[in-house]
Image (cartoon, rainbow, N blue to C red; front, side, top):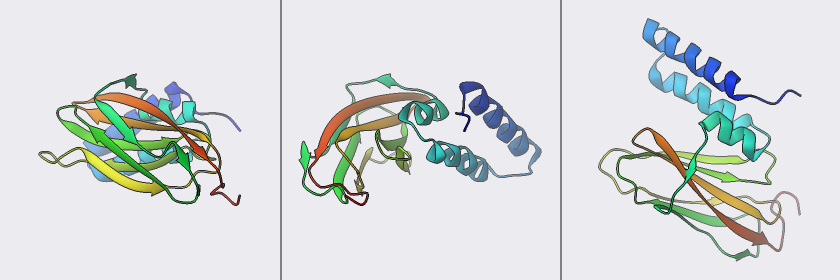
Length: 151
């Protein structure tokens, strides 16, 4: 299987922008198609490429247990102190498909999300935040004692 490249992501994004400009698809439909490609990525690096990459930031924080007793239900929260936060993505590095969740943050609301994710093994949890059109990230390791993906 061929891994998606940055060029693939740019071509797909450009094609979607053209369809939106022509009125053939809505902006929401185009975004869903692009996000869908990131959900299909098999590695963390590929998912991050499809999202557009991200710079480390101390203004993004992850709250998750240091040791999760059950990998099937690991609580994860992400907070962004960055102004104009638009989106928050949660990725689990060693999952078969690392992009686990994506959230749209309406303008004027607190940039905080909380969910539960499934983790098959001990790994890094990565939060990516889109704020003012730029991407920022942070990483936290979570150890799993009982696997959530059939373990």
